[in-house]
Structures are given as C-alpha cells and as structure tokens.
Length: 346
Ligand code: ADP
Image 1 (cartoon, rainbow, N blue to C red):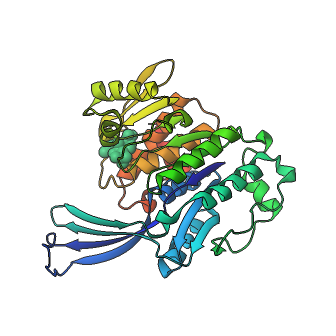
Image 2: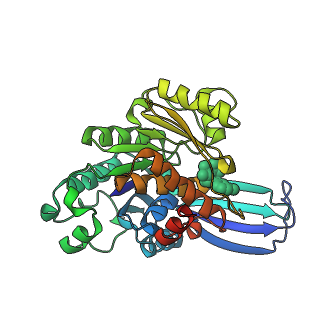
Image 3: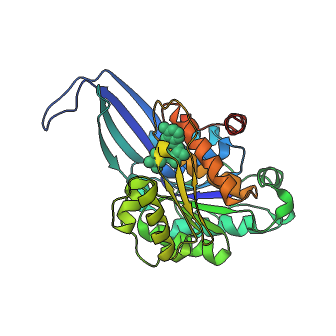
C-alpha cells in the first residue's frame, strides 16, 4: 500500500486576456474548478494505476472540501483518514492564465496549513493497521481526534483485505509513505520520523522549492526534486544532466538514500549509493505539464510497492509523467495501468 501524507487543494482557474494590474477588474473568458494539491494528485496517480492508495491530510468544512473528498474517492483513493476541519477553508489555488499562457497564482493553504501532530497520529494508526497480517486487520481507523473524518464509514474487513495488495506480503515491507512540502514542514518531519521508526520507505517530493533542515535528509529513502527544487536544496544552478548529476550526488552527501532529479522532457538523473544513471524521457506531444511531477512520483512509488527495482521504477515514473503531460489538468491527467504499459512497451 502507499500512504500519501500531504496537501489537498481546489484549483480555481480563470482564463483572462491578460493578467490584471493592481486594483484592476478584468473580464475573464472562462472558469473551471479542478481538484489538485500535490498530495492528492499523487494519491490519485497511484490509485489510477491500481495500487492501494491511502490519503492522510485535511480539507475544510466547505463545499470545496466535500467536492475534494468525493473526487479522491471517485478515483479510488481511501479517504477515511482525511480530516474535515470545520474551522477553516479548504486549500485553494486561485489561478489566472492569460492568452500567452502566463499565469498568476495565489495559494491559500487553508486546512493544509493546519496539518500537525494529530494528523501524524492518524498516519501512525494507518501504518499500524497495514503492518498487521491481513487476517487481523479489523477496524482500520482510529477514532477521529477532532471533527468528522472524510470517510462515511470504516471499511469492512473484506474490503480492507481486497484493498491491500499483495495480500501475501503482510507487514509493512510492501508499504511506502509519500511526502511533499505543501503542508507545514514540522508535520512532514514528524511523519518521516514515524515512517522510519515503522521501517517503511519514505519518498519526498521537495516541492514547492524550499530549503530543508539537515535532520530531514537521513529520514528520506528517495528524494525527487525537479531542476528548480534541486537547485534550491544544493545551492547551485541545476540545468541539465551534468549539474543534475552533481546535485543528485550532493543530496546523497546530505544523507538521503537515493536522489532522483526530474528534468522534464530532458529525462531523469538518478543517484543511488552504488551508481548514477540517466533515464531518457518518453517522447510525447506535451499539452500541459501541470502535475507531471506528481504523476512521476505516483508511478515510481507504484512500481516500488510492486517489488520492481529502482531502475524500472524510474521508467514507470517517466512514463506516468510523460502521459500526464499529454493531458490538461492535474488529477484528470493521471493515466491508468493499461495506458502506462502501452507506452512502456513502445
Ligand atoms: P515537475 O512537474 O515536478 O516540474 P518535470 O516537469 O520534470 O517535474 O516532470 C516530471 C517528469 O515527467 C519528468 O521527469 C519526465 O519524466 C516527465 N515529463 C514531464 N514533461 C515531459 C515532456 N514534455 N515529455 C516527456 N516527459 C515529460
């Protein structure tokens, strides 16, 4: 199983002829709402690939929160451990995109900004349940610590068994925790500590770009920055394969197990303790690369829980990222398993 501990946002996207000046009111061409948030996007990417996906995080007590939960559930993501925080709005990204494709974005974290130790406790309870052999997995969830939880009811034992694959594996050997940086950093660090203590692998997508404390790196099995994020972490410009290789090695020096630098259409550099290798991007016609990075992380994690080696998992990530780039939107751009396999077979 894969557990995603992170953000859940609604994107409110207005198309405008140009971006507004301060104090100016513009008339837009069109408007759409779309579920997003790096955490939720990654959880959807995983579920769409047919791998059990558990979301832990928060939405607000507004209509957006209900819509966000429904869309996660429709994609097959388990939301029993998403807290509905009645005291605040859902996370919102208000986005203007002009005729030249330039954008202006205001992100208000809302409920995502409230994620704290109590959410890590829920994460811990999920990990505890997933670590039991399937026959003993009764009552998957701890009672809500505050407010109501997203799921309408706890799943039956049969449902749980069905959802946890491969059932023969038992224990947490087959589990991975995915983290990003759209929730408070203190919660990210505590979540990584809890996972490490439980012996489960941690993948950190250090996005959006920010500096990280030294103590976090040794808790990370795989870090997956893009060029901008890698540059921020290592303190030099990362632009292409050569500097990405240097950055990946520098990240290993900081204590991560493996470092994967995502270079968009230029491919991926991966540094492990044993070797550094390059994986080319799949050749596709990109229409919108929004959430390509989230798709990559979903594909990577899905392959790893299925027991594939890292080299092959990076190929899954690259294929999922490429496919996401061929479709508009975030969660709507995530591919299913047959589509992924078809691209990899080319
Ligand atoms: P982010 O979205 O985090 O900035 P990237 O843009 O590097 O990350 O995209 C993540 C991955 O998705 C890339 O490493 C690559 O494998 C794939 N990808 C993204 N854009 C393209 C593209 N135009 N063509 C092919 N693959 C792409």
